[in-house]
Image (cartoon, rainbow, N blue to C red; front, side):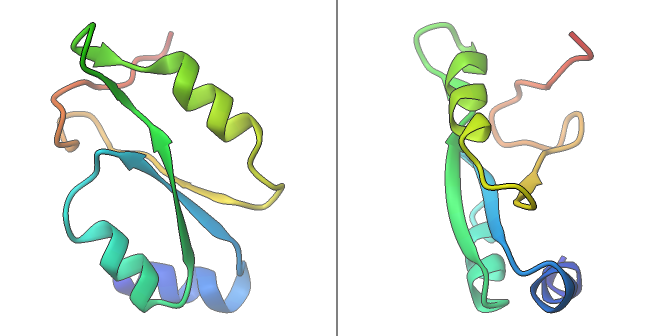
Length: 85
């Protein structure tokens, strides 16, 4: 993962949007690669599901060229996976 973010720093220096919550090591790996972390809402406790509106609101304001870290199915700490919908 670190090598990937060092590549991004060298060739696509940009902000990295990371879900809130994310795994504990993600923010430090990205920061140690010299990139800026910005969190986007992901989990909505009141519904125990995806905060789609919050996520899209934040990501729609991202600068062009920003990097978005998305968790693959079954690889996020919330247990809530994105769907094709």
